[in-house]
Amino acid sequence: MPSNSVLEQKKAIVADLVEKIKKAQSGVLVQYQGITVENDTQMRAAFRKAGIDYMVIKNTLIGRACDEVGYGEMKAQLNGMSAIAISYDDAVAPAKIAKEYADKVETFEIKGGFIDNGVVDAATVKALAEIPSKEVLIAKLLGSIQGPIRGFACAMQAIIDKNGAEAAAE
Image 1 (tube, rainbow, N blue to C red):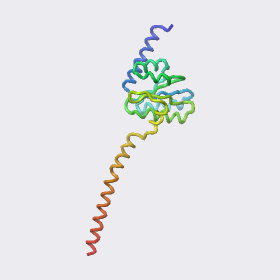
Image 2: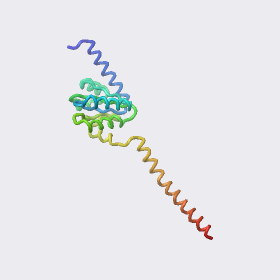
Image 3: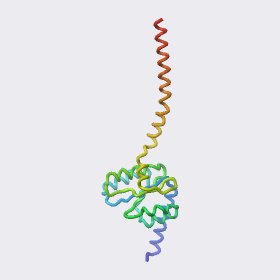
Image 4: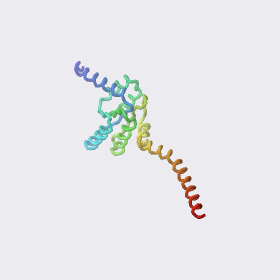
């Protein structure tokens, strides 16, 4: 039977994870088995750069934290060697980075995750990873708004040029 100090450490880990999940916009659960040290270091750096907490935690502790936050369904995804990536600012960032490494490393796989206070499966996480970045979406929106205005301005300029050419010919 574990000692009281070990139990207290585990309770502290679960409490910390619960707080992180409650503050998070999204999280991705991955199986990190078989990833090389080099790829793991690069992936952790990418997560850190994006402001994402990436932690390797025992499945039982992740499961307890999920129960406390109301994500009990996520416990079905807890098998094998698990890690969790939690984002507080960008809901899509953990999915993008995890998918990048899942494509590189054959044994590294996305198991599922959570977003908008709900549990999602691996297919949903992969679909999230395909969404363009916020900046690209804003640029596309502005481009589509600017298109008709630009067309109108060009048509007006053509009328002005035509009238100016006719006036000069007279």
